[in-house]
Length: 633
Image 1: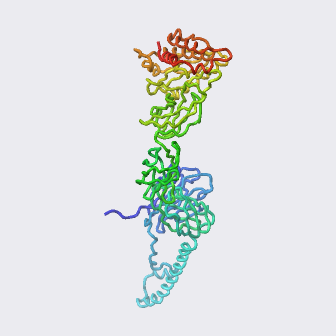
Image 2 (image 1 turned 180 degrees about the horizontal axis):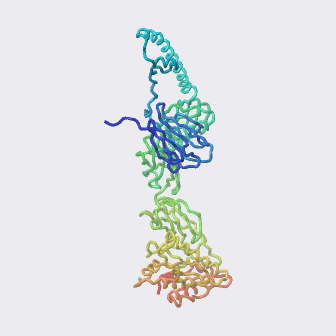
């Protein structure tokens, strides 16, 4: 047969490194709490004495005595020396307004674990009498049986009367104290509105004998306590604290005079909305809202328009997209409601996924870093293909709702191009309704800039190129020391543009190959490298797109010489109009293509290269420059 005895009373540490440690109490045994090595519950803190308090369980219940501590002991925020303990009491070792935060001890006394004190046994012979009477009672009985009986008979009525009077006085005094505690001192809770709520919501507690100051009232929700937010005319407001699990808890109000009787209250599962699937829809489509706390009777609105709920489960609601007002790409707030509770809004876009909703910045030029916001994108950069009027863009980073891309170059002789932006992800293609204003300079001098871009047709995942708007120069493979190959390409382009800025103001720049500590291309006279050549980079040139495959990939040193020559001649042609001087000895095919480029872009002193000439370059020349860059002799 199972043991039906209640759990034992216990003391539990709250806070500090021993948070949650519990020690059970035994009847007739004292428990010392302190920082000394002989303490039963040792709490190492400078404000706690070696034997700060003693907790005793005896025939009168469980009590606590301060051990003569210098700073004192507090029970539920009140200073005490010796006091009886009740379930839920909190023992503190410093004043509540102290800046020090030593651990506390919480008292747990399960119902029925401590029996009520038993009534006193009848007095023993001679107990309660004077010394002479006691001596007479202890002396041998020499008198006759009859005389003793007569004396006892004469004395018994007096003793019974005294006992009755004393008992009546005790009952009157104890009953008066009990009546005063129940009806005239301790607070009382009459109702809680609402009768159920989730953590974080504010409830109103109505009753009587509350402290008129809010800080003088503590509201207990089970074993969690919170201070009252306000107190006025028998009404308290308090915030439901985080609870370990939903369900019914006992609510009590505690003041200096004591605690109220418990009042039942239901803690609900929080009503939350976490995700929408799909993230975009049209009228009539079915959408699933995921979250917690859903139940029968839940309602869903989309942009303020009620939606038809098709199915409800505790963690999901399936509803039908209503005919809400909104143009394609507009985000509408989806809110679930149950009674007086509301979930936080989630955006549901009008349209089909993948969906392009907005751009940041709203307009730009070739080479800008652009953020595309929307829904239904692939979770990684390689899961998305982004094109501007059919020209692929380099995707640096991705999430289901945002893409980071580099704006590609569009060879169109117009000052502003409304480029159609299309995203391909998860086997689906976005609509062509999103356009990005791409600006370019057609008048004045052309400014050489290095850009990061995708490899294009024939390229592999994990690759990117760095070049000009005319043609690529470097083929990168692998992310190196960056988070992605796209980010690595963006960094290399930024370093090369710093070199271009030096050349444009007349400084002499020259590229060199370094073998240590790693193979790299650097600028002469500077300690930093511009681009590091990795074995993965060299391996990519064995099967570079658009050129015949090599029998074996070039070595990193060979590739570094190829890169240094291409970069040097490209900068010279774009900033001073000079001819190719580095590539003839390293890459003759590249030297021939760069020579044709110099002839097509005549450089004039004082005015540079006209932008219109760059826009009008023939596609055949651009193709030869690309092939020369990817072919390492």
